[in-house]
Image 1 (cartoon, chains in turn blue, purple):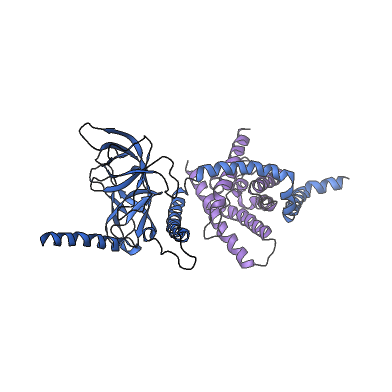
Image 2 (tube, rainbow over the protein chains, first blue to last red; image 1 turned 30 degrees about the horizontal axis):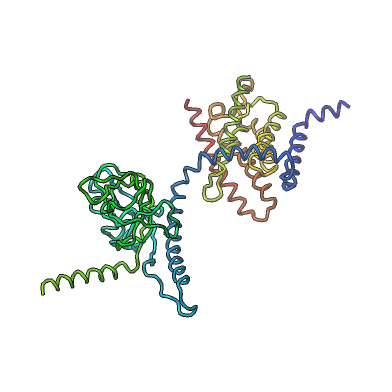
Length: 298
Length: 169
């Protein structure tokens, strides 16, 4: 008996070591069975709660790359969206099934993702710089949007950068429609009238809508969307909503304040829209002016 | 008692750091630093050997539970504490055992050279057992060795940096 006791005193640690290792290895070998056990479920519940807290803390770190990814994805999807809108119009137009109506050229848009790398909002003459240029397919007169809202127009491009004239610049004028509150995504809504959006400096959240005649019934909260009459923007992009409106006595037009839907101070990811027939359209429209001028001379 | 509380606090802290941060670190795709081995290295020299083994096992079990790979870390940490038990006598200066009885292995108590060697033994045993048990085969020995070496290097680096800062205070 004392021999056994001596044996344990002498080799107890080795026995303990072997015992613990055997437990660990047996559990490791039956990993699947262990993971099905209630004990594991309990511990895993605690662990996953801790992981959830960590996720709360760390998911901000990955947010910027996630944003980048999303903005690229957005631009791809928007390009597709315009193609499908075009196809939808073609297919839903009357006509026999063999000879379809031609594709609607006003929906031929292609979208590029870009990032705002410089942005002035404090000045009157505000400009914005994007990290994409001619080599990325950006060109002058393309429209710039963010999350489906109008932002501005590309003013000039270099190989790698583009300067945007944002709505927050008095030089930028945007033809807009006033739509009722219940505008659906296809843009079919009751259009009240059209006007011209201009920013006159000051508060970056608000701009003015001009040339809306005083007989039009307006309501606070009416949506202001792009009209599609400009050569740059597709129809139906969000611009903002009517914050307040009034009529001065000696004027035929409303004085409308529009709350812009884009927060220019926090703008980071934008999309540049390429209207494939923009150049053609502008050349055609310019040719009318040339003709008119020549006619006047004659 | 105070030392025990300190050790428990350190235990919780290092396990949390390991599970929440370091397990997501990957140097070259292999080298995950496993600093919780440092908890075994930091056990007091005079602690009962069986207790050392049990604490090692407990540490591995806690890591296993929080990571969800059953038994693997427990096997490795138990082996690591056995490595401590067997090798500490070689590395501790043996002039006056009683003087060092309450000491933990550290650059201050053993000198840098001895400490690096001691830590290397414990870390290598731990990593070897860990990755071998995890792989459950010796089929890809080269791959296994690469993992052990890379992970061992990052672990050693972190342990030594930590010890360096402790020793400067």
